[in-house]
Image 1 (cartoon, helix red, strand yellow):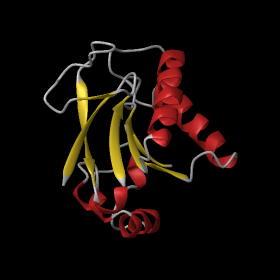
Image 2 (cartoon, rainbow, N blue to C red; image 1 turned 60 degrees about the vertical axis):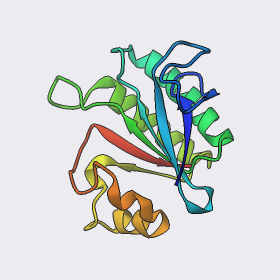
Image 3 (cartoon, rainbow, N blue to C red; image 1 turned 45 degrees about the vertical axis):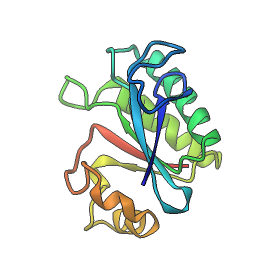
Amino acid sequence: MAFTVICEVCGNSIKPTDSICLFCQTPCVVLTKQTGGVLHRIINLEKGMPLVEQALERLRNELFFSGRQGIKVITLIHGYGSSGKGGGIRREVRQYLRYLQHQHQINDMIPGEDFSRNSGRGRQLLRRFPFLADHRDLNRANPGVTLVIL
C-alpha cells in the first residue's frame, strides 16, 4: 500500500516526511492508495470554525482538486451543529451536493446516517469500494459526515 501526502487546503503534493504544507503552512493528511488507483480522502470542513460560505468555498476547491487527483471517495466532516437540529454547514453542504449530483458533477452522496452494511446504499458502496469496510463511520449513523462518490 503506497502513501501520498496531500495538503487538505491547497491540494499540493508534498513529501511524505513533511507534516506541514510548504505552500500554505497547513498540517497535511495522508491518503491511502488502494489497488486500481482508487483513493479515499477525508476532508474536515468544520476545521477552524468557518462560516457557511467559507466551508462551501473550501468544499468547491476540495472537489476540484480531488477530481484532478483521481480520488473516487471523499468523506466530508461537516458536523451536526450545536442547535440539535442540524447545523448550517451540514444543511448547505448537502444541498450543494444534491445540486452537483443532479448536474452529474458527482456520482453520488451518502449521508453518514445511511452509511451502514444494513442499508442498500451502504452495501452497494462497500461492493464498489471494499476498502471502505474499515471506514471509521461505517454502521455509526453519524449525521456529521457525508460520503461523496466522484
